[in-house]
Length: 308
Image (cartoon, rainbow, N blue to C red; front, top):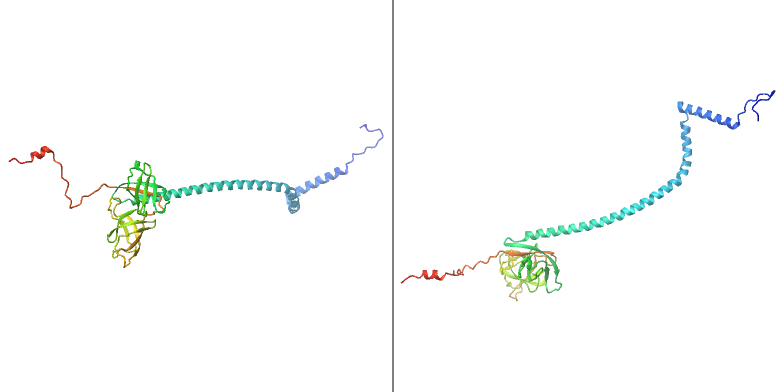
């Protein structure tokens, strides 16, 4: 094609296509609308209506992505919550065990404090012992403690708990000792009624909650709730320490002796720790007994003989 005009041909201006014309019209209208909206804000309501009409379409387009994100977040959150729940449960169990240990230690400290406060004044020294084993024979009320001859324990040594007389040692080993309880049928302890000082003997019955006082006459001044304490006779138990409380008194006119039972003050079937007592070595001489003779050297004895 030649760009040169042929001689004699008429000039024809270039034609604008219909598509281009429409584009120009739309551009011009857009510019006019933007100018009017910028200056007079006349199209705000129209724009809001168009946004509201297009919102469902936007939600529909974004729904698959939103659903996927929700499912992923839900599964991740559930897994995280399950892991956290399992971890918290394990921590809770561990804390419960620690709390139980702390409560046991606190109770043990309270019992030890009560034992230390329960030691009588005439005790030279004392040691706390733990009960290792309990004799299951109903006729043998005995326990094994974790103190022996290496700790200075001797046979027939007083044993107490935080409430009263518990018993005395019967067999002593190197590291452990056997203690016979007040309630053992073969055990007896000299006691006296605190109210009036009446002395008698409390004997075990084979029942951890009952002692017998079989040697009181029918007319003895003993009442229910009378407190029985150690009399100090025998040299095993310190005087004035709680033993039992009178629970029942029966007087049969046909019998010369009263039937008296008492409830032990010590927790014979519940104690976990006991205390061994070492009393002061005091053996006073009776007032009627003359003092022992003093040995005199032979040369001094001859010097004292008067000359005739």
